[in-house]
Picture 1 (cartoon, helix red, strand yellow):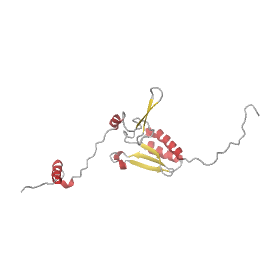
Picture 2 (picture 1 turned 90 degrees about the vertical axis):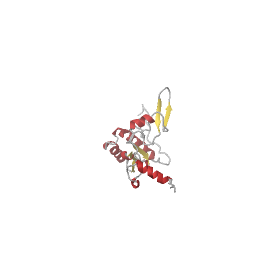
Picture 3 (picture 1 turned 120 degrees about the vertical axis):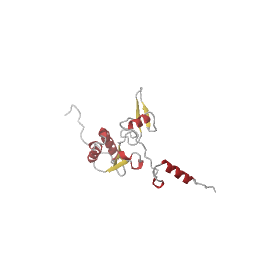
Picture 4 (picture 1 turned 180 degrees about the horizontal axis):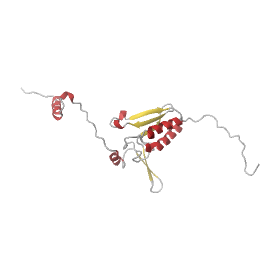
Length: 180
């Protein structure tokens, strides 16, 4: 009699032969090697799906980027959300709040748990202090402190609701120069 082996049994035999672990302990989890940010930048800097090229007068062109985790939306290594392990994001949140998100350096291979998010609903001065503490004072990315505060002020200004109703007229007397 000949014996017919199923596909799974042959696969299990090859897996057991390849690994030094017994058959029941094989988990199949392989960790991805970490790639340096400089290498990622060299691959991504010439062409990627996030590039926005604006050509103005003359030969000077400005290159912007729509990538996530890019504070200034500029195409440079310093601001790149793809090439840097430590990134900062400031976005408008729900109900007139501001969302501050930083990346966790140990979760680079797990996109679902990559960002450490915090929602801020306080006064602008308190939010600015919190952003400053998170970005610069904890030695996370001190080079992005000025850009993070600028982005916070822009996002906070965009969340303010304009007052409705007629504009108030200026009722002060207009002084004409040369008259008393």
